[in-house]
Structures are given as structure tokens and as C-alpha cells.
Length: 171
Image (cartoon, rainbow, N blue to C red; front, top):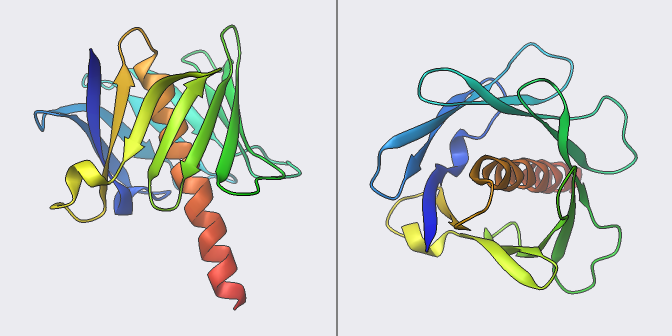
């Protein structure tokens, strides 16, 4: 059994707030894009406004990196783009106090898997919402930390599209 969530891609921007919905279309989490900060920050809250986690861009990093912090500011995970990835986009997620995650697939087209070792624990796909523009789904296997997986998917979406925007501006 798994849980599927819906995320509207165009709304993922610093300074914007957006909702993550369940497969029934009910709002289940709010993501607050904190503006006027030195670094990119997204805050995940439950329906009562309680902080669940934050995604932050480190002040200094050699390559694309985002940190997911818990409710008390502790690091939950560090997400980094792989230096060499011959055929597909690849990202590594170093999870504190848990098994690391590997993200692989077509990140820009939002068709990829999140794995623990060889086991797929989540899938991200735009195909489930073809009729809804700029929307994608995240399907998470039972027993996983849904907030962590959703934060990973959103952080990778932000980093991948920031990178694509930078490349298109250079042309």
C-alpha cells in the first residue's frame, strides 16, 4: 500500500506558499517559501501550522546541495547532485539516523524513482496528472517518512529547475 500526493510545480518558488494535496484533493501540508532571506528556505507545516521540517540551501557549497532540517533545526538529510551521471540524472540523499536514498531518472521531466539500496520507496511522476498543467505526483510506500520524501522531491525539483534556468540564460 502507498500514499500519493499532488504538487503543483509552478508554485515552487521562494516567496510563494503552496499546498500539498492527497490523492483525494484534500490539502494536507502547507509549504511556505520564506522570502527576504539570504538563502533559499522552504518551511513545511501541518494543517495546524506546526513546523514539520525545512529545506535550506547552505550558505557555502561546492555543488548543488540542499539540507532538510527537522523541527528543532537538526539536520535530517543532505541532498546533493551526483558529480558524474552518464545516462540519467542522479542525486544522493544522505539521511541522518537512517538509510541513505538514491534518486535516479529523468528529473527535469519529473519521472524518477527514490530508492533505499535496490528497493524503490517512492516514485515521482507527471503522468498521473496529465490533465492538470504543471502538476506532478509523489507516491510513497507505506512505512516511509512521507515528509522527508516530499521534502526530497521538492528540493530536487527546485535545484534541477534552477540549474536548467541558469543554463538557458547562458545561451
